[in-house]
Image (tube, rainbow, N blue to C red):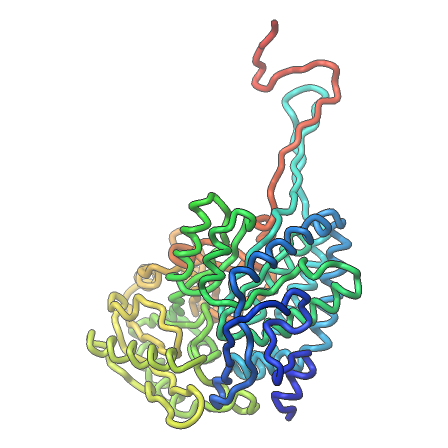
Length: 509
Ligand code: UN1
């Protein structure tokens, strides 16, 4: 078991000499506020970082703009080659980086490593994509005219990421943006700057080896004020933000005010429907990973369980039996399945939500205790509730599962599942074709992700990731999500010696 100091050293982070971003040329100026990062595992300090000032921001944006001039002209497949090298480096650093994710964020090591695997996978995806940034050709209505579209890079892309996936979500944005010819400025969560510095170090190495300016990928550690600067900055044509709906509304509003583009990946209130035709073994396993995995801190976490009355008691009894035996503890221990929450605020939010939902009539079936001692450990809770309760309508970023009973046909379950403000992920467990297809139909789930016999969390990078309603509507990662990182240009070329007008308009003089 390597110590945190060894891991930091492997990733080029000097903990004894707090650095804003080790290895980044523009990190060496000014007096900045220092922030110590404590591990949610044991409340021990890991390292300190310095937070950026508005002057740092200014310098970084200027460097990014300069880098864009170079980067946009490099052919896309050659940009893909740089991303390939980043993917290789991530493979080499998977172990220490995955461990640092666990130390800093608290998710179990399997998930820390899984997160780095997502980064490696998106690199592979982006490398292939770098040769497939296809535009269409159309048939012109005019003779001897050619019409087609091409996709050009946008410029500087601002990425605001959350603590819960401190590195993977950035990579979905950054690697796709990079092959598209954009340069990225990344503002990670203030709670998880160290993993971000580790990534920046890895990337800086690759850029240096290829004689490229580091401004192609920049990192800025700061608080919400930096996100605000970015959102209001016309030099940042696209801001991609992951986090709470409250934060997303602020970013979205500021970006929209200047008619910029945004990709918003905000809160979820994800449900699993279990019908009377479900394979209950599979359903239970999916519920466990979805509800208590990552200690309930994924945007795709299963927050509501909508169960048919015929199987309700069985599901409830089985879960209530399993929950007290969940291995909660140090996320580095291979037997642990539930690690700590990110910080004391998260623990308080967990307690408050449980208190409020009980005041509304919710019945706490199991869990809900805070584990005394070091670290931010809680016992995942199940609450029997009704969908309209205020707390059930909210996303509490903690392991609370609301158990909701439905009667009659699957349409009733779907109506409950859709009756929230958020629209990220959803799932149904059924072996009945009609129920499954109804759930996936236009009259079914209103979420960006809808699964059959798979839980709500743990999406693959190959699909477009994101959701509807207050989840923000953005799509990241796979499929054709890349199009949001580019601007489309329609080109019509006349190779005749006439000048015919479209729509047959005559305009002779
Ligand atoms: C997030 O929680 O912000 O689908 C992203 C999942 C992961 C990503 C979650 N692939 O659970």
